[in-house]
Image (cartoon, rainbow, N blue to C red; front, side):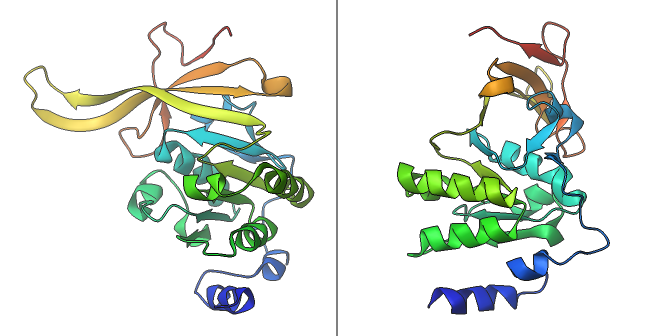
Length: 234
């Protein structure tokens, strides 16, 4: 199928609009601020929010990717995920993602760059699965990064991305809720998230999180040192 036909078919899906339509002002459209909001539990990892025009790499956690989309989509922003066919819609909803503002493109097909470019033009947040990120060579990645900056979008990749402004990773996963005898109900998963970046974000930071928390959404967890957010050396 040709790209224009594919775009026309996608635009005909309920809840999906073209880039031109997305550009039309709507009563609930978010202001063109310098960053998109994130959950308070995540704000300390990225100086308050997802900076428009930036590329962020997320390693080792689909849940963290979805948690990053939650606050922005609930505030009126649009998000698209491509190259992640196994992503759970129910999990996305539990983590707070507004499903009416989320588009899923399981397979970008042979026109990978054209599809990614169209998504960057039409959505505030674009998530690239690992196979998609690996399929884009550094020169093309730099061109797409320029497009992201010009559009004021945010690019989230689950694979390596040259020149990423911020890298987030998850470690020390531990479920809570089971008693010593192994019985009980899983209530929350505690993890440690680390951010490393460039410029103002060059100094690594860590945050103890519940991902998901007892209610499904991401929440701050009590760190072993008694603080929910700490900075680490190196």
